[in-house]
Image (tube, rainbow, N blue to C red):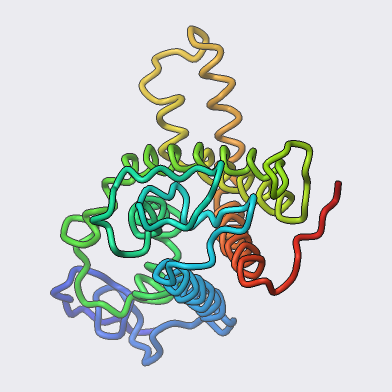
Length: 276
């Protein structure tokens, strides 16, 4: 029978050699599968998006090709926005804003994703190794949870949800405008229109499947029978919530692809294929 250590660990956690309640083995864990593959893919995918989104956000150019506008730059509220005749740009910030207009509101959906329950799990495991996988001990000797900066900001997730939902409404308006041609006549549908429709569908799916949205709709109710409409909505959102991870990745990918497509049109890499 394996001997056990009886020493007490000052951090109060078991899971590594020399800690209370753990067999006296040298290995940090006994997993022989590729447990590291998931966190590695997560880190690579999130870093790729961060690098691309940072480049596009600071580029301050090539984000509009009639009738399409990049989701990174909408709403465009600075006076230095590219000319988007008939589009959703209102110079509410005036001439004093000299930076990229994408930086005005891009932090809101970014904050929504950073504080999202799924993304917390992803970057906790992938970037901080807290823990990197089930059955694998943390690399940290101390854990303070979400009680200190910067992780305490995660408690503002619900407020980021409100802001992101408002931006999703604006992106929906942008999507409707993609059914116009370059002369702003209705009845147009190009490949960019298809991408915009797919993107906003996934964005709404991710937003509506959020745990905060589920709680807002069905929380604080004593009996569902007295609120049949909210109960049906809560049931629908609960089903979406089970696909929150898939919707998170799908919407992240669609946002990047939609922006890339608008960028390629703006630099005249090719013309938008018209479907009708």
